[in-house]
Structure formats: C-alpha cells, structure tokens
Length: 240
Image 1 (tube, rainbow, N blue to C red):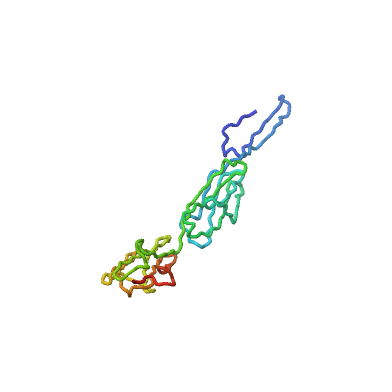
Image 2: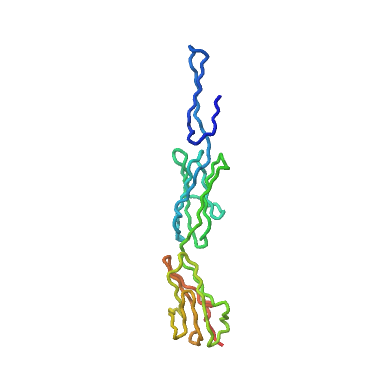
C-alpha cells in the first residue's frame, strides 16, 4: 500500500507501478496506474472592457478560465441577470475554457457589474469570478430647467430669470450652448444676459425676451439639444 499526501496539480498523470514476485526465479508481475484528479479553476479573466464602450454598438467581451479539470463551465451575469454567450471553447488539453459574450450596452447600463463565473461541474465549491463595472460612452442627454424658485407662469418685466442645463453624458460635453428661439445666446453684460456653462441668467427681463429657451451639449459621441421650457407647444416665458 502507498499513501500519497498533499498532491499538487503537477502530479496529474503521474505513473505508479506496483511489482510483485514470490521468489527470485518467479516472473515479476506488475500493475501500473496513471494518476487522475479533479481541481477547480485557478484564475479567471475578462478581456475587452479595458476602456469605455460606445453605447448602442455591438461589443464582444471574452472570459478565460485556466487550470480547471474537468474544463470550467463559464456563465455571464449582468447585475445578477444571466446573459447568453455566443461561443464557448475548450483548449486541447482541457485546461483553458474561453467564452465570448456579445453585448449591446446603453447609457442606463453605466456602472452595472458584468461578471464571468467559472465553475467546475465536479467541484461546485471551487467556483471563482471576475467582474468589471461597465463604462459607457453615449451622446448627451440634455434637459433645461428653470431655477428652483422661478415660476414661469408668473414672470413680470424687471424680474431676474435663470435656467439650468442638466446634461447626462460620458465623457463630459466639450461645449454647452444656450439658444433663444433657435439662435445662440452669448454672454452680454450690457443686455444683462450672463451665459456661464450650464447656467443662464437674465437680469431685469423685458417683453422681447419672451420665447423658447433651450440648451445644447456637444461631445465626441455626438450632440443633442433639449426640449424648450416649458414645452414645445407653448412659450417659455409670459408676462403679467
């Protein structure tokens, strides 16, 4: 009898031979066995998310698990929901499993957790995971809003009016533009119009400033313009 202790993965396929004879002239009989063993995956890696991904375009992500016997089964999860892979391959020696997932990511997926889980079917407790938080590039989503204390239904001549441009984008927009009835507004101290990035302030407004106010955002992924205040079917400023 032989006792094998603290076996390592390197012992896979080790050959052991037992020989027996009952006297010097008798033929030697022998039996040989090759050591087989199961072990869980040693490491798992996700590739293809090293940089931010453009929204709305198909993007392939690869998961690779190594050193599992039998080969690891790979599954994909996006914020806890399983996603179906497009390919699953195993290396010739069975020690490397590869799965490819094709994703179409949207702006609302920003920050969600994508996980690849590697499991050995014979050793459920030996599963390991790799995860990435999604970084998404998408065109700006733009909304213009009146200042919190401003009532658009009760503006009178001589009031101060201020708007904020709310932009959701990745990366941040390179340019914010304010528009009055479709024409770009510029900072003009003499007219008491102050354009400062995402804020528009107009002091002591007059009747000629009644109209539609919108803001636009521009970045490498595209540009977009907000709906006017308060709606496309009505003017954004009235006077008592």
